[in-house]
Length: 428
Image (cartoon, rainbow, N blue to C red; front, side):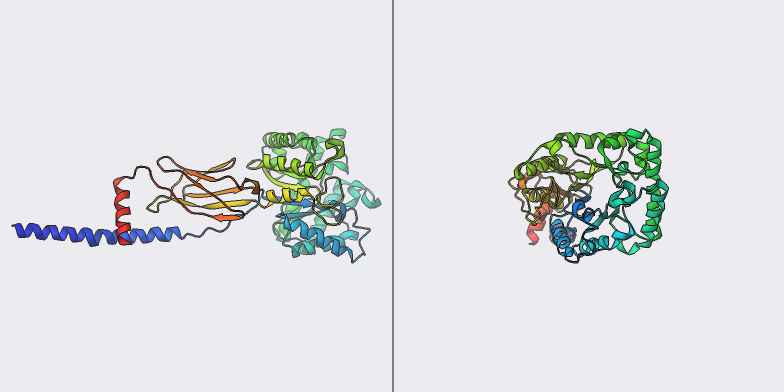
């Protein structure tokens, strides 16, 4: 009887030694495979849409430089500088009239060479009377826009944006604040939007068409919830106010009033009548305060700085030398990012973990994944990771993209976790 008991105990112990570890080893293999899950590097953009405007050169000089081949060197330099900031788009304001099409194509071709998408931000010269063109009606504007898109399909790429009538209140039938024609103005914008969508569908191009940039006060009047919905859920404002705080407040107000998202179609400083004169340092600080205050603001999905060269808000000098504001804008257009998954000690993904960096905070999703963006001047701040029942961690980050999986250690491990850890260590 005693021999039978010893035999049974021996079999039981052999089972513990071989069978259970074998099972746990299989679980370990799964864990190791899980740890090797590949996550593509996230976008380093602050906003979905990031642009810099070139109007003083792409529009104002479009006739003067039309037959000047040496102007390509200027275009090349400006486009290259814009691309290096992390902009996703370049705003090109060349008119859509046949006369200026060769100039528009030059800007577009060079922009493509620098991997930039284009925000077509011109108009028909007759709408505002540019270059002595005769005035056109709303009906003419619609028909000319449709013809332009279909006839010039080759200049567009998926991911571009096209505005048929930026700051539309400045021409045509006039500003609704003065004319009182609120409903007529709304109807015209909606007709333009529907026509552009149909035209781009006809040429099989996925181009964003809802960037109807307008004065901020016009937007407050025009962009109610039904109009915003009819125009693709976006309010685009060309807005200049005295302080960054006021601009942030207006973004929030318009998002709430319209029920949509907001894009800053034009922002910049200094405008002398609004901001007075600014040094390079003051200009950079104004931009820093604005974009810093907008970080993490879910109401804002895009921003376009006005402008690159040629006006009071310029961030490059005429000779191509960058001002201090270029570095400031770049750190928001090309932010740093940290991303990865968070596991416990036995390789299980943990959801609901708090991940903080500076003033940013996110929570891991159901897959234990996190992704957090931060600007360069937060480099002395540590990534803080914490969850109930686990020891917190602080991790130093580097500039650029940080691919970082994190293992958290439980404060009080249960028997299951202790046993798996014991066997795992035994098998190594």
